Amino acid sequence: MTDSALQAAFYCNQPVDMVMIAMSGGVDSSLTARLVRDSDVPCAGMFMKNWEEQDDEHCPAEADADDARNVAEHLGIKLYTRNFAAEYWDDVFARFLEEYRIGRTPNPDILCNREIKFKVFAEHAEDLGASHIATGHYARKQVTDGIHWLCRGVDHNKDQSYFLYAITQEQLQRAVFPVGELHKPKVRELAADYGIPVHAKRDSTGICFIGERRLRDFLKQWLPPKTGPICLDDGRTIGEHTGAQYYTLGQRQGLGIGGVRGAAEAPWYVIGKNMDSNTIFVSQNQQHSALMSNQLEFDELSWVSGRPPENAHLTAKIRYRQQDQECELSVDGQRATVHFPQSQWAATPGQSVVFYEQDICHGGGIISSSNAQVVS
Image 1: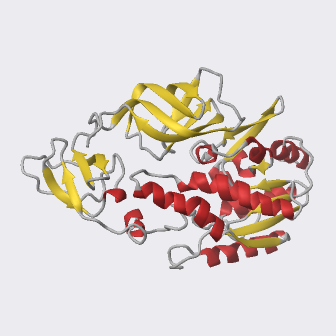
Image 2: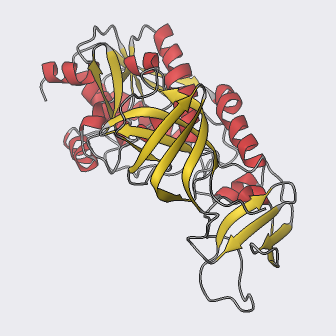
Image 3: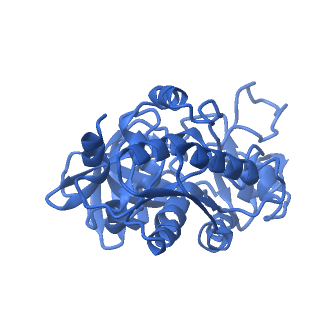
């Protein structure tokens, strides 16, 4: 790709004073830095630390910072470091814990993008003279009639627009997503060709502050265990759990149910929970009516363009890896309803429903309830 092509694809032909690159020490952000540097605009990198580790094994921020420094030195660009742990705690982690405490299942990556990467990070970048920020997200943007639209990355298997749906029009206008134009194997190939030190580094998985631990083990540090019953939908108790807050709708792992008289040797699924009585309800029927819904209510609406989509031909996703689902959207102020012709499985309060028009991500909101049969 030529410098002029990079300029058009990355910056939508906008004037650029300086680009601040979010450098995590991983291959995606490192190739992003190389591509931005090659686009012949002033640039620098910034490593952000968002979590104060209690256990370096689970959140190796120092090793990542060293990798970011090595990449910046390799590319010949300046690297700033900033600690946003206090902001992350207040704006992301506190919300994460409260959602689990009341029985919902949050997505902290979405909050982190909106509140930290595209807000706090962008503000620090602006203080240092940057007009734009660049991240290693697999997403793209396009401009039509002055509106910046968030689009899926070319590699639909790696696309991260779902996690970006809550950023604002102003935030998107200042954002650059170079690897969104590439497939992941090409990212690895280019990083190796360019001799980028982290070209073979393993991709990070999960949420930074949890790392490789089981979510329940992590939550127990902040939300103390509380023994309660595991019940069938008819109220019969068949087991015991350590806290309803640790379980999510549709969960089948870690239930510890076995040897139930009259039950088949088949998986059990969480079909509901009552936080007041600290009870979880289970069934071996994966299609139980408590797990199936064709209408969801959601709030905390966020539309990338600043307004709800007007096109009737929309699809939606209620989880990251889900295939697009046909839907009908109805918006009333800051609350909305979405109807699906095909019933959806385990639509979970606290998770996000995100709307698309082909490759354009319009935005979405937080699921508050569904028309599934309630078990309590």
